[in-house]
Image 1 (cartoon, helix red, strand yellow):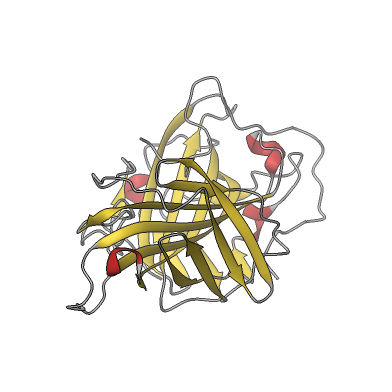
Image 2 (spheres, one colour):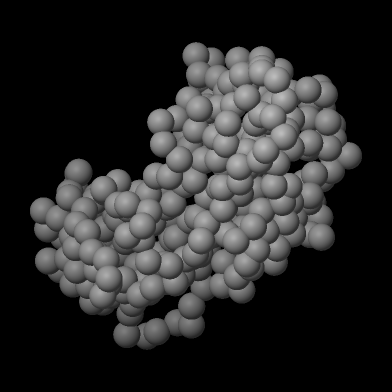
Amino acid sequence: MLLSLLLCCASDVSIMKRIEPEITDTDIVVDSGLTLEPSGEPAGEPSIEPDSERTGISGYNYLHLRQVACPACVGELQEITITFEAQFHQPSTDGHTSWIPAPGQCTTNLFGTSPSTIPIGVGSSISVTNPLHSFTAPALGQGYYQTTDIWEAQLQRDALYTVQTEMGSYTFVSSRGFDFIEPYTMLFVDPSYAFQAPIYRSGATFTWGPTSSDSTFMINVAVYSADGASLLGYVACGGEDNGSMTIPAQYLQPYPQGSLVAIHLSRHKIELVETDINNSYIESHMEWEVVGTGYIQ
């Protein structure tokens, strides 16, 4: 299944630009020179020193904050959406995040993959807490829990959360967002002057801060026709979370000048955490994503 990293893929959904007189004031949305070529191994395989007392991965913990600079440009209703989900299953040797491109790797075919597992229920709901914030996630299916009832002001950055189930518990550390992203014009918030960031066919460079040594980074550039009516293609590249990434020219040159672009920048923090559920591990995945706009130059 093509991941929701692309804002719209179906032919009946489009991105939109409203043509009005140019506005010089800018609104930028932020939270409070690696050039990539196809190579490397998948980034989404968490590593940990073997523990003879624990075996396998018994679940997947996913906390995703998605911030859209111009919701009206992409047909969305709100700027920020936070989703928590957790899956529990019989111990497996396979992880859930191998679809994320490895540092130095780009792809034009980004598909989500899930390991083949046997789900197990761990209660009618699970609780997620830290000293300043707590919420519950109800069971939506066998072994599957999800909630979007989380406000951005509640989410604690770089904080230890504890997940409690009827079969045991585990902890994970949340991530943080961005103080700046360049080009800043990709973060314009109004359709009348959005789509101003030039994405050069000779290669497009993005920078951000702060950086993180325990995370990887992915940038997905989705290209649409000049009227926003159809998706022409996309490229997703992975890299280190070191503050700079360049999308190589070979992936951008095929698109005509003036095409509209949706740009997804996302930080991925992935780790294995210990749990007493099956005396195993939970794969913890925190994603912080910002979506901006631009055009092919």
